[in-house]
Length: 327
Image 1 (cartoon, helix red, strand yellow):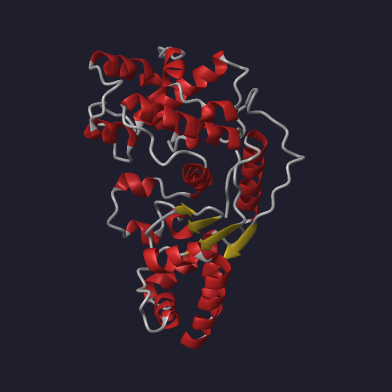
Image 2: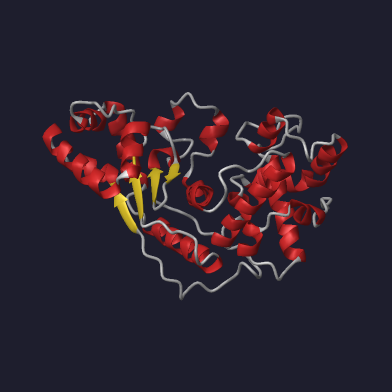
């Protein structure tokens, strides 16, 4: 597997030395454990071992992603037939080929959690990271102490299996391993660090996602900026060039404090584009929230990442923002 580490130059307070941070995480390849079973009976033994080891995360994988009924007579038999399905077998082959060596990704993950520990010493850290074939159901999921990675969701848009999926093209385009590290950071932060709800107003969503992306930035300061917001470089360039115009649109239409659900979905949810902004990437509200939070932090250098996340005064962050015209 090739995960590219980018260095685009970072400045304080996110360019920090984490060499003294101690982080220990176990890495497990469940798809490889399944492959070792030579019969349904052996698969049942594997099932029992993994259930005891991974608990809640394994239950999510079996019962939610693979849709095995808890009342099923033999989960081992179900997994045996799943593992030997011709289509699943092709996907497993591609996973094994693309992710044969995960050492670079593992180093990246350890480093990102060292950065998290540096900025948020009391934040929970995962004890285990598990990989599996999710049958194209879900990329990354987090519990209170584990992370699950559906590696099939990161085989690349040109992969022979992904090409056959009925997913929209904009989704396939992001099924690439370059987005895997940021997806891990997002999943862990949203599950274990941030409140469950961003709030009710448009600006609440902007600040919530702005803080989230800023934390991703703090966890991976050397990652290319476009990837921190799950954009391609061209999408990121468009968002930068459109920031001033989009902000004026929001202000002119009095949308900043809107609670309209459809409006919030248009600006903050995954989609082919941000509706009404021709040629734009999706989630422009998230991007602009990030710019807002970055300006707040730049203007208040004494504020730490911990202070930012704990700040509940939205007006303080909003007042620091001035949309920048692209030159």
